[in-house]
Image (cartoon, rainbow, N blue to C red; front, side, top):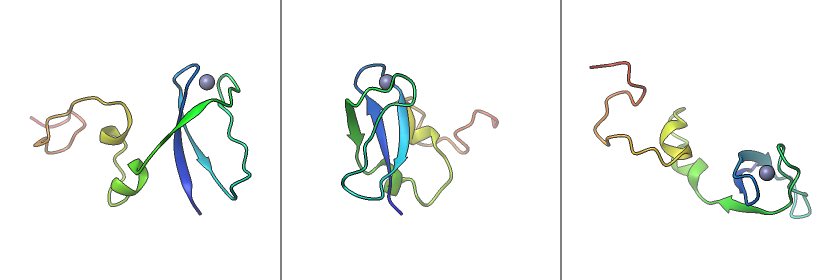
Length: 73
Ligand SMILES: [Zn+2]
């Protein structure tokens, strides 16, 4: 089933929503706002791994990072 990631336009929260149909109402779990921006292709781009780090926050991890979690030197 399709899961889309949204960013709330009002409070900036990011959340994922399972969209069962086009009529699914999306609202922010934090502020209940209906205004949101769909975050395209994040999910599919990261589907091969379980890492959420690169997808989420715009944190600029070094692309050569071996683990991305800061646990290795
Ligand atoms: Zn919100």
